Amino acid sequence: MLLQILQTWIDRFTERRIRRAAQLTSRRSTLAKVGTLLVGGAALPMLPFDRSGGVAHAAKVSPVDDAETCEYWRNCALDGFLCTCCGGSVTSCPPGAEASKVTWVGTCKNPKDGRDYLVSYNDCCGKVACGRCLCNYNERERPAYRMGVHNDINWCMADKQTMYHCTVSVIVGVANA
Amino acid sequence: MKAVRYALRKGALIAALAGLSQAGAAFAQLPVETLTSEPAIKAKNRIYIPDIAIMHIADGKLHVVDGDTGKYQGVIGTGFTGQSKLSKDGTEVFIATGYYDRGQRGNRTDIVEVWDATTLRFKYEIPIGEKRAMALNYKYLLTQLSDRWLIVQNATPATSVQVVDLAAKKVVSEIATPGCWAIYPVKSNPNKFGTLCGDGTVQLITLGNDGSAATRTASEPLFDADADALFIQGEATGDVYHFVSFTGNVVSIDFGGDKAVAAGKWSLVSAAERKQGWRPGGYQVVALHEGTGRLYVPMHAGGGEGSHKNPAKEIWGYDLSSKKRVVKTAGHMSTAIGVSTDGKKLYAIDAEKASLVIMDLSGKQPKVKATVQVGEFPSQLEIH
Picture (spheres, rainbow over the protein chains, first blue to last red):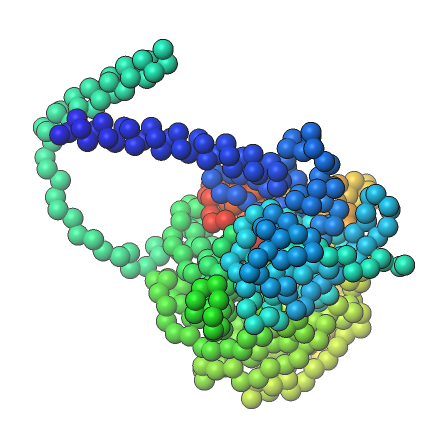
């Protein structure tokens, strides 16, 4: 009986170790794609820089052109989950989520045409946090005494269902056009 | 081959463990145990660490850690973008938060919860309005002025504050503060608070007995939100608040008079350091010990527009009276820092590892005493 228990315990332990290793490997590659960090088993968000080293994109498009990376040019002041990674796009909320009624507008330079575009960072609302592609860039962002250029707040705040799901980056004009 | 080796190793391990269990028979049987709950936190000096838990944002947390050893003490749930504040006497924790009755959806309730700071048990709640700011955890978005007044920051996104009467256990007024943010208590007057405004002015508001704004003044412009914005979090010596700016200046403002007035401005960085892009960064960027006049700031190099939330490469310490740098130490990737009430310990939240770093300040330079992993996204710390 004791031997049987030990056998089961050791098998479980081995299995757990293998499962954990698999989890770490798959998470690591996902994390390389989104440019967040994995430390001690927790994905740590909100660091305003990329640690992916560009590995996941070396053979594909440059991150600055890839709307599923934090480095995508429109995301220069986006703080939150990219809707592009959550079932939506840069201009659409994922299924079942509603676009926020209020928003703020950042200014990002498109490296392709050199123009400064006004980018509306609407949040998508009414569902649990998407939890994918968490970014934190802050160009021309300011504390909330300049609420119109602030990103440490839930822009679903004026909606009936205010749960924060993810953030889009819609072009709404050209700066100084 | 590998499989055979593994089976052999497993067999050997089972045999060894079976042997151990037989040897164990010689020990006395363990007594039957009784399950209890810890009655209260044991640590005398505690750090309360809010965590927005963005991956599951409806379910934020307030972690409590022993400020001397780093040992984890317990937790309080803070709901959806809850802000927390220790009461002035340190016996209670206020949490301004909200909940949906179906978790992610349904009917919304916004409240100030009052918890016991030592037993971590819920005491009572006060209903508040739905304008409560759903913001990342920052100091001064929930401020206790006195035994009676607790002030809650609102954003719809139009900004205002709700005044909670703690004696009557209800919201008694809303005060519009358009273009302004955060609630700074003024030590010399328990009915007065200040707020920073986007046009560079500071407003001072004094409450009447009914909780409305009895007086309100606006200062001259004291900072430039475009060229050199002030971080929201600062610390006070008496009624004088010391803020730091995005480009590395200390801007001191006296909140004590009828109007807020400038009380000194100086640079944290030399001309050469400024050129190298050394700047303050993070969410809680000023740690001040009033007694010794030591002021600490988390600094990063290579900064520029948009780097104001970058984690620290180094933490720099200054003597506030001489304005000279006296400490330069590792940054621990910190985005929030604080000093113990006795001035002997420096605390830093490591944003990369989601850890609290405890540094001993008794020597010439800070020395790491303990590091403890805390939560998922700690961005603030409050010292008990």
